[in-house]
Each structure stands twice: as structure tokens, then as C-alpha cells.
Length: 501
Image (cartoon, rainbow, N blue to C red):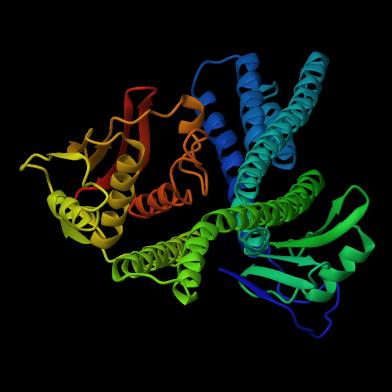
């Protein structure tokens, strides 16, 4: 768990006294076992070869194999000791005179010396190869961990979330016991893992100011400066692993770049949000100006007429009052749609989800759309076997109302409007088809945007362009999708999906 805090602490020295991390007793015990195993192998070979008819060359080569094996497994020191012991044993047991360290034939001195030199040289070469293999393996693992760390850093774009997560990412990637990061721009320290006084705030600040890498091998502590070029952006402390200098610098560069990238993305997001907000404000203003002016003009004219000295009969007064009533309802609907759109954008709408039949949804929508559908034939095609759907009945009925009223507005009178539904795997798809003029391919991708209205219809049919965008937001809040299929001159089919209960 990552903990962020920002407060002063008492300064601590650069190297904190304490119990060494190395278990010297266990190391010495392991070393003793290896010496015993190597010498025991020589002893076993001596016991076997003294009972078999073998020549000195076979014995020498076998001893050399043991030396090479020891060097490849346990290092140069044990291998050199094994080579010296093997040389003495070879001289004592297998070179005449046997069981005597005296060498009778001068040629055997050459053989003995050659064996000793070969064993030591082979041990050095084997030890070098082993170390290079270990280094290559270690570097490969570090590269893999660096790659894993880079993937985690790039996956987070929220700068605040990233700063809190970086210590945990680094600790998980390299198997650390603790990690801490200091960012002077925010004047905060982010920590994770167990508490360690060695990774103090003062040390992190000092490394940030100096810009120099700090490594304490005994305490297994590393503090690396985070830099973008020559500009310091913070420091990262790690405890619990001895990483190479190159790896530490690579980690510092990765973390610094990711912090700068997240900050840049955040700044860009704020800029885009400001720009979009300005566009939305302009669009709302244009829409309000256009759509509110018409009913206000009608209301104003009707009220002025009623207040004038003109003589009106009862029917005329009734007509003017009806106009005022209708236009007031229209204004109320416009304000309601704008408020609902704002709530949906802010995700502040609470859904009351429950299982309902699709016919319940359709009936709830038809109850409020009958007046708009008076001049159209309505066809309902819903199978009785259709499963129930999990929805907020009022909200989904509102979606269907918008689609039905749009179909009625943009279709010629007396043309049919069809409402159908069918299963689609774990979803149910509901469709509303009309016989209107259709929508071209370019506008099909725009009709669900806020305040967008068709180029050929925006002045012929009243509306704000919010109905479809509200419908889209409601359907997506239910986990469904909404779309359109249309062909110029043949009508349009709006369809949306809802999850099965």
C-alpha cells in the first residue's frame, strides 16, 4: 500500500548503524561444505583408481574434470585449492615412486607441473565464464524488470495516481522491501513497503539537490536522482536489492519520463476540457437563443394581445391561452432536457434497475407519446418469448419516447412506425423504424452528438438536438449500445440494446 505524506522528520546520518544484512555464519558453513565436497570427490576418485588398473593420464584427466566442475559451480578459490590437492594426491598415489612425494622421473615433474597449471588456468577460465554467465543472466532479468516497469508506468495517465503508484511499481518489479520517492515540485514524499529510517526525507532531498547517485551496498540501499536532461525532478530510494549502476540510472530515467509524460497528459486534458467546455457553452447559447426565442415570442405576442384594448370573443381568448399553455410546456421541456443532459454528463443520475418485460417499456413510452403519434400507424412486433431486461423503466421509456417522437417528426403523415425487439445473445435489441427521408452516411456519425441537427431538417422541424444524445447517455449507463441504420429515401432504423435480466 502506498502512503503519501509531507512533514518534517529528524535528520539521520548517511549510513545507519545496525545489524549487517549478510549472514556470515551461514555463508561460512556453506563454504565449508563446498570445500568438503570437493575434497571428498578427490578422495573417492583416489579410492576407486587405486583399486583399478588405470594409467596416470586417465587419473590426471579425471582430476582435471573435477577441478573444472568445481570452478564452474563454486568459484576460483575452491577450484584452485582442489587443483593443488589433486596435484599432491596425483603425485603421491599415481606417480612413481608411489606413496611418496618424491618424483623419480624428471619427465613426471613436467607432467605434474603441467597438470597444476592446467587445473589453475582452467579454473580461472571456467570461473570467468561462470561470472559472465551470471552477469548476463542478471542483466537479462533486470532488463525484463525494466520492461515490466515501463509498461506499468505507461499504463497510468493520471499524474496523482501515478505518483502514488510509482514506489509500489518499483518495489514489485525488483523485489524490494521498501521504496520512496520525493518530488520537489509538489514537496511530497511517496512511500510503500515497510518503514525504513535509512530512506529518510533528508537523504531523498539531498540526492535531489546534488543530482548524484547514492549506493550503500552494506545496507542494500540505493537513492537515484530523477532527471530530465540536466533538470532534476526528484529522487527515488530503493531498499532490499543490489542493482547495477546502469539499471539504477535506467529506472531513474524511466520514472522521470513517466512523471513528465503524466503531467503533460494532465495539462493537455485540462486544456482539451476547457476547449470542449467553451464549445459546449457556445453550442448551448446558440441552441437556447434559437429554441427559446420562438416560444417566448409566441407567449409575448399572446399576452400583449390579451392585455391590449382589442375586443376579443371567448374563442379568440381561448386560442391565445392555449398558445401560452403549449409554449410554456415547450419551454419547460427545453429546460428539463438541458438539466438532464448536464446531469448525465456529470454522471450524477441514479438508476433504479429492476427486471421488466420489453412490453412494459414500450407501453410506458406509448402512454406519453400518443399525441405525437396520432397521425401515424404504429406497429408493434415483440415476441412473447422475449426475456426480461434489467433497466430503469422511467429512463429507458424516455429513450423510446425520444425515438418515437423523432420518427413522427421526420416521417410523412400516415406512414407507419414500427417498434420491434429481438434477442441478441445476452442482450435484447429494441428498434424503431420509420419511413422518413433517411440520413446520409456523413450525418449518421453525428446525430448522437449534443445539439446536432440534420442539415436539411434543422429549420423545418423544431428541436434542440439533445434528445438523441440524452438517449445515448441513458443506454450506455445501462451497459448497452445505441446505433442507426439508414438509407436516403427509405427511412431510418434506430436501435439500442439492453442487458437480459
